[in-house]
Each structure stands twice: as structure tokens, then as C-alpha cells.
Image (cartoon, rainbow, N blue to C red; front, side):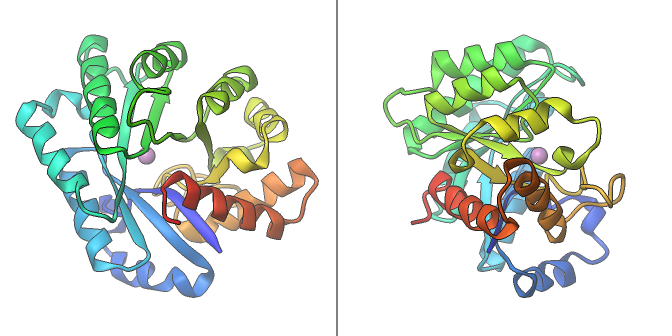
Length: 258
Ligand code: NI
């Protein structure tokens, strides 16, 4: 079965057909989806979606673009939502120096606070990092990796070097690979997929964004994950079935569903 470890079905891109699309996923081999909150509204929508659908789990957290919305009361709201057993991770959290919507200081403050919340609740983290590879890795090392309560996590939509991927794996994290791996110009990511062990790779869409070839530029959804699996299989010289089985198990280990 296929595991979509990172989706945003609360996004308005799905307003017209959300329920119909979600209902069609299990019959197409999509066994589980983690819907990931980005804003406070998104976190609440994830919390609702995971209670409405058996195969949907939720990640609850505030994306660095929305770090400015956060305060102590917001953190307490996240803590309460995360107590639900289907809230499997804190995320997505991290640093985004590409959009730079909040100061780096504010982004780091709430990235740190949410990593501490994950340690407190013994839940994994989903990390977003864009144009901030070094700072993200430094923050994770300082605040999260190997600390009491550590439950690992995933570096979602991984875009760093092979070396850094190895470092994250050594610290106990998974590497999230999505549609970008199918792009012709994704040389480094293809190299990452080749070099790191299959046991540390999980599949994701980040839908509605980042649809794989041949749907590049269109609205993405979990139904397109087979194109990602096929590409990883080709890179690794395995069958798509082997990759599907391994990544399914990896995702269940990551989110502690066993
Ligand atoms: Ni995302």
C-alpha cells in the first residue's frame, strides 16, 4: 500500500471535490495519508479531517511563513490538539528563508518552541526547510536530535546535499521524497535517492503542490505517488513493488503506527 506522508487536503485547491477525491483514495491503493497543518486554521482543519476519515492522520503545527501568528496561547492550542491519538506528528515546522515572511529570529523562536513541544509529547516532527539548510540543521542538532523525549521525524520535501541527508539519517530522521524527484533537472535529489538507504525514505505529495511528471504544474494529489515510487525504483534498480512496500513500512515506523 501507498503512504502519503505529507498532504494539504485542507487547501482551497480541493474545495470543489475534496470529499469525492478523499473517498476515492483507498480503492486506488492509498492506505494512509497524513494531512499537515501549516497555519492555525490548517492545523484545525487537519484535526477535523483525521476524525472524519479512518485512513487520514493529522500533523499539527505552524509553518515558518505563519510564525507571526504564534503566541503562548496558540502553543497551548497545538498541545491540546496533539493529545489526540490520530495526531501523529508536530508539523510542519522549520525555517523558510526563500519567502522570508517573518524575521529569522521569529522563525527560529517558534521552530524551537514546537520542537520542544514534540519532545514533551514524544511525537515526531515534520521539518520544512527552504534556503535555510545550515540553520535548520543547526537548530535541530541544538534543540531536538537525541534529546529526552526524542521520537525522530522527517525532513520533508528534502532539497539538501547527499552529505546532509546522511547526517540527518545518522541522527534518526527520515528523508521525504516527492514529485521533484521525477523532474529532469533534479540532479542532486536523484543522487540523494540513489545514495541513502531505502529504509530511510518516505513518499509524499505536498499536494496541491509539486505534482510529479507527467502532471508537473497541475494540482497534485496522492493518486500520483506511483510516479514517485517508479522513479525511486528506477534510480535504485528495484521493482516499484519493493519500493512501495518498504516506504509503507518506513512511514508507519516514522509515525509510530505499529
Ligand atoms: Ni507541506
